[in-house]
Amino acid sequence: MWGIDEKIQMAGEIIANAKHAVVFTGAGVSAESGVPTFRGKDGLWSRYDPEEVASIAGFRRNPDAFWNFSKELLLKKKAHPNPAHYGIAELEKMGIVKAVITQNVDMLHQRAGSRVVYELHGSMEMVDCLDCGKTYRWDDIEEILQRDENVRCSCGSPYLKPRVVLFGEQLPQNVLASAIEESRKCDVFIVVGSSLVVYPAANLPIYAKKSGARLIIVNTERTHADGIFDVVIHGKAGEVMPRIVEVVRRLRH
View 1 (cartoon, rainbow, N blue to C red):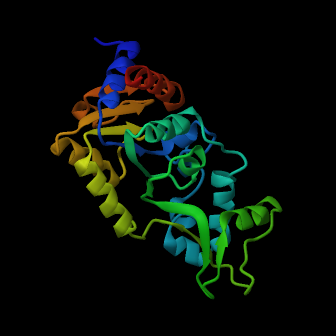
View 2 (view 1 turned 180 degrees about the vertical axis):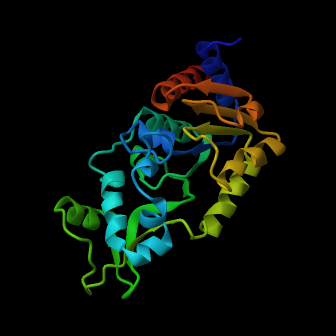
């Protein structure tokens, strides 16, 4: 039975030899930056009804409920990139990682320095008024939230919606298509901080496997898909990824 040190060494060797690696991240990466997770006994869904605060129907009924929920989830001042985000960005700088595919909407990968990021569930970065069409940046909205005021457009509309995918909405098809293409052409596919239960995103490692890629997963808990991975590391992404990057750096120099 391999220990964690041996698994980190194996993962580093696989990544160091990659020509086109892709990283797929889920809520577990952002959780280590203080962003609450959704599922589990302490997840947001234990306190909020997703139909009310995170569905397009709920948003149209009560946009203020959505923004109250978002205040807890995403006040950016609370959350900063952690060592896992920076490690992934460093692998991109080395020319190994060609794309990051993420289910997160918190923009932490970009803030850590990742340049090619496919956001499957959209992003909070831009916010549109569904009535007049005016567009705001997240920083403008954040200031309103921090003053504890209701989010309103200058036209008076409460229907300011960030470019995130709510329940009842389709994933952005162009982003999903790019993510599938990257998964199929990579030679190493690395999952970081995802339990692989949300579809169609959870199919991405299967596409990579069928195309002959080596698969690595770093997650705090077991997943139903662990069996298809070449290296399975159960641990915190913020602790494991920098150690993997260190192995890669040593082997590449």
